[in-house]
Image (tube, rainbow, N blue to C red; front, side, top):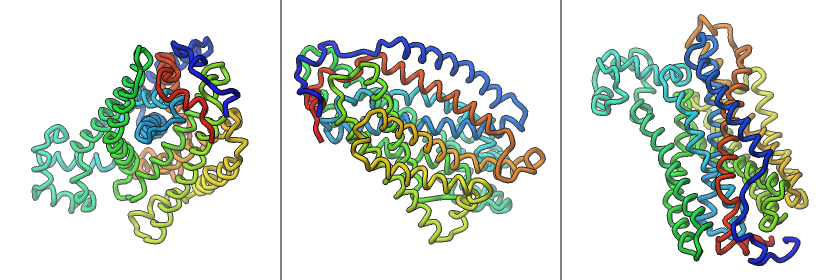
Length: 458
């Protein structure tokens, strides 16, 4: 429970805004660092020698998708809060919304992934489609859907795909074609941007409403219902298009749920850390109590278990079926040091946090729970690193044998590119998140349920 019963007199009439010198300095430094490193990264992606820019393309994809999951996870928690009509979460809802509002800005870092100069190292199927299109005189078929679909039904296309041993890719062409891929990318970014901007606008409007009521709450709840479907489509198919597409032959029926579990889990970790730091800095003292951390800790534990369940289910189904197109994923990641990394992930991502998060006292302690949240983010880095990076050496060895023919499980020196990409996009994430936190009140002080949330007991 809160240290005392909170009344309306305890809630500041104008709310609380983030006015902290340290936060301001961090925002300035992270923004400047992001701008500088983005220029360096652009040079490495487009102008560096092939031995540098090819591995760095994978570095960029890994870093982008990590922060993509955190931002879209903020949208998920906002939607869930609204749909469930949550009372306890009102005090921390604005943090969820601010995390989700980073999504449109993070998507700016996806621009290199839309460029053929970067795609050619990541997605073999795109190279095959462009090569196949050239024989039928369709040089820009990704921008011409009528020609595109006519081409896929032509005898020339069928013959070319079979002659070059791409029959499997031919039968996936209804989904894996450039026009459809670009269309889906636009859909993901635009739909989720409109969703979070609309919901955040409704929420922020409460702060200055002289007669706040439940009208906006009902509107937010209504609009969160059908847009939850858009969220599910986005997190699932973005995982297919950006990560599973690295090897067009591989597929998993659990893939979308697996990436969703990691996204929900680790965005909650960011929310926990953010609220704990704000609490420590003297903010949100009236509305956030150990009870809120206890609930968030239980959600962290729940999604730790859910992630483990989905991860095991994916592995078990692939192991039991023993289909070549499915087992290739684990064969690559059981080679060399990647096998050790996978074993570490099993214990580090599930066993350790499961045992620790069972402790009720820890979940009520902001500092201890924040340390666990940081730990979970590190495990999420490892998880996505294992998803993206092992594919790099295999693909580049086959694609550019004259440059990477000696590579087996890792490319020497490529780790520094991974680190650079992570810091570049990470600094941008911090800048835009702090910018969002400082733009409005830290919690919806005029929400009719704020007192219910401040006095929550569980």
